Amino acid sequence: MGRGKIVIQRIDNTTSRQVTFSKRRNGLLKKAKELAILCDAEVGFIIFSSTGKLYEFASNSMRSTIDRYNKIKEGNNHLISPMSEVKFWQREIASLRQQLHYLQENHRQLLGEELSGLSIKDLTNLENQIEMSLKGVRKQKEQILTDEITELNQKGNLIHQENIELYKKVNLVRQEYTELQKKVTEQGCGSEPSGGVQATHTISNGYDQHAPINLQLSQPQTQKNETSTSAMQLGLQLHYTED
Image 1 (cartoon, rainbow, N blue to C red):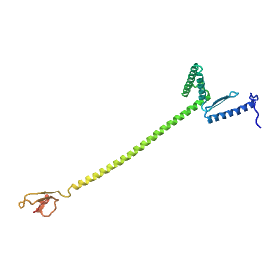
Image 2 (cartoon, rainbow, N blue to C red):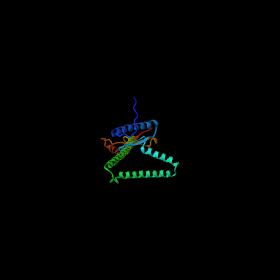
Image 3 (spheres, helix red, strand yellow):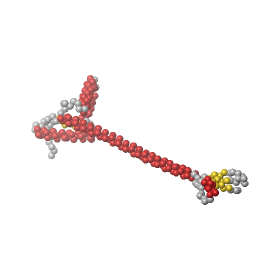
Image 4 (tube, one colour):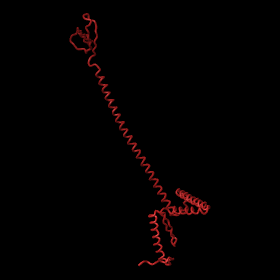
């Protein structure tokens, strides 16, 4: 059995009127959301209850939807009256001025100025907004410092590696210098004479002019023969060698 038709008139019972209002309001919200999603439409509606409570829904933004509505409405009126365009731009200027005044006032409040007219709730909201801003600033600062520290660590590692390479090169140069010193020392020792100094001179001996005489310096030897004492002190021995 189907439901009977309801007479569209004001419901006198307050409780029934409130229940009907809640049901139909929820139904409108559901239909508006479905319409916006299924049909890709820009939907916005405003409801004021009998007690003055506001209910609204907008698929994008209520302000942008209302502005779009006003522009289209004024655009349609342009064909009727050219003066409407002037009024439209006057309203736009007034709206922009109001927005500018709001932004300037908000900026001054963020700086801690003109706070005398704010309530506890407004001050709390302002404090929360400042705290969120400070968190964002601190986070960005920490990120920059972290990046700088990472970059400095990388540069430090590169410099450390370069120092290691230079240290290796210095050690190689020291080793080469040490080996070269050893070679020079060995060559110098090998060129010095071992024992006495020998020299060969050719002189005339009366027998053979070509017979060489070898002169050699030697240590004096102790002998008992007194006749050869002077010769031993000089330590000279003449060796005559014939060809």
